[in-house]
Length: 553
Image (cartoon, rainbow, N blue to C red; front, side, top):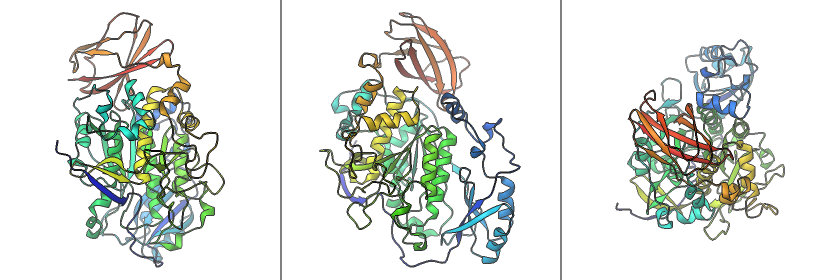
């Protein structure tokens, strides 16, 4: 492979500033008063949650409540019927809000008069093309098989330093590379991603579960900045890259979904509405980890929404509220703190100020904090950032399959997010909140946090050892054959204990359970399995776990 190296001095957590003057609003967030007479019910969650999400709720005893019900479709119909210019741009079931494009004051007054409308605030001054409402448009994905076996230092290529600073390579050596975990990437676009090998591998191996585009239709000028639209491409590569001896990411065997929530050419309050909607999509799909290398501080294109730092307490922002709810739904949110450490703002952004998330700052591979990394604490005094990772000269890919190095907390965050997926793969009995806390406790300055490093640089292998005896950390010694299989496959490992074998599909649904006796090979009947990729988990009586992948032809 002919890899061209570039140095990108571009800050990946910035937007193109177009205007600094107040704008006449055209978009509004409508707060609804209730979810009365909803067609949805707690007893039928399959209408609004995937089976993977439902299974996770059951696994961690997370109740399904009215909060999970989508916004009442009758209310949406009445809002849309308030005028021919009204368009639905976003909804939030957790906040019970509807975000609309409504440039006509008379039609806005009509909406305000609806009995179920509690309040309305302006959020943007967009000028949109004349077409239909926005919806979560989804791309398709495909399945086949591939994998890797190398585990030497040379294997990681340019990704070595940014994973080794966290002892993440030891997680991989133990067999935890993100297999069976789902990472949702909330970002600003994946321009050129189809040209990158890491994306093609995701598709070929059935680990790309789709893209959801939340953006309304802007005029053609939006497409004049392809690099800004490639932000998600660059960020995702830090986790998903899998080119041995060139670049291996922090979760090279995880599954991924991409959610486009960011309008890069401007910065307006409405982007928080799109972020909240993206978080809800990630939860409904059953994502295990969310990576968000986006942040909001001030709104130069909608300055009437600017506030001072007193609102950066995790409670005022709709995006920050959504991030906190996401964590309580059994997801690990990893959120960049921002690149404002060297400017007059200085502070962290939203939603990194959220409660119960991992907000991530940036350092170099020699552990020196980056000058641009935004500083904590949160306004209400909580430790922020939570942790820091490599965001200086971080190895990544950009369109054209070009291996590059770049700066930004945008790059530090996916280093952590990928390793979170690997750690949780190793410790599936622990909740998202417990996994985040053990990461904090195994960071370099947990006992003396500060506003630059937070709790410091996390040691993911130490986090694993703190919960599982080193002698119980499983090695990847499972032999599975034939692979791919047709009617059956055989599992052969070196365990001297009785164990339980569970087979999961790529959505996390358990499709088979078998007991395996010590020292015996186990034959699994595969005739009833649909074609595709499956993840196997072997659990011994002492809760040690091993994992494997099997493909059904």
